Length: 308
Image (cartoon, rainbow, N blue to C red; front, side, top):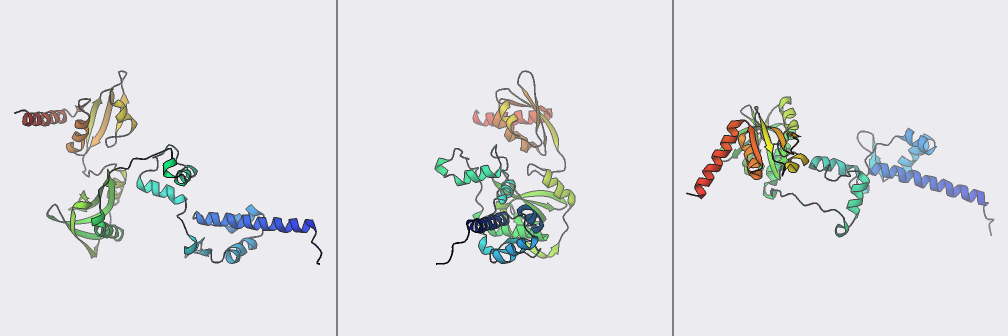
């Protein structure tokens, strides 16, 4: 019977194996999150030679890790079983839900996803969205046209259009195309675009002013001129205007009696009137006076139709 190795040698072997396992687990975890691997940094962290890290990547993780065309290490396609957790934040920003929860840290989001739906303490009511299932080819073609800067021709509300596409914008459950037509930036509802044709023979150069304008807008009303509007909001509903902006570029201050004075910049009166009508009689247009008169005129006409 061969002699048993000394206890010290066994412990040293176990310790070496544990360190190797910890090192490989750390590398895989970082690769899984899509992080860049710096072999010198890892060598310092684990107190090993750089050649040891190179062996980890080239030999011990062969078939699991590989170099991409940029020379950086990444998981092989077969090893990428799930989406890297860091993409949760990227998706939240893209979908406009980054600040949906008071706590937007990665551990909190992962904990929510790991908790069965029936046991979660939170429940988010879905926002109604239009169904674009039948318009998928149009949506995809517009994405490609924007990326490749191709001119688009289509029918919109029975009229032929020729436009330079800039962005696909989602607002209040509806998708719009921001495009330049006849030197003017306009928006088109995707659901109303028909007979789309992408002219791959014609390219255009996007105007930086248009790109900056679209990025700064928090609505889909595209006109060069805006009107500054002043509203007086009664204390009974002031909270609803203060907790989140209900109007473009909204700012407000509260008077001592609880009344809220709200300023906003409106592209067209029809952008404002639906909001004011919804909150009547608690909202009044102070400036411009002509818009308050237009509101009153419309209300009288409706009452006249209802009470002949």
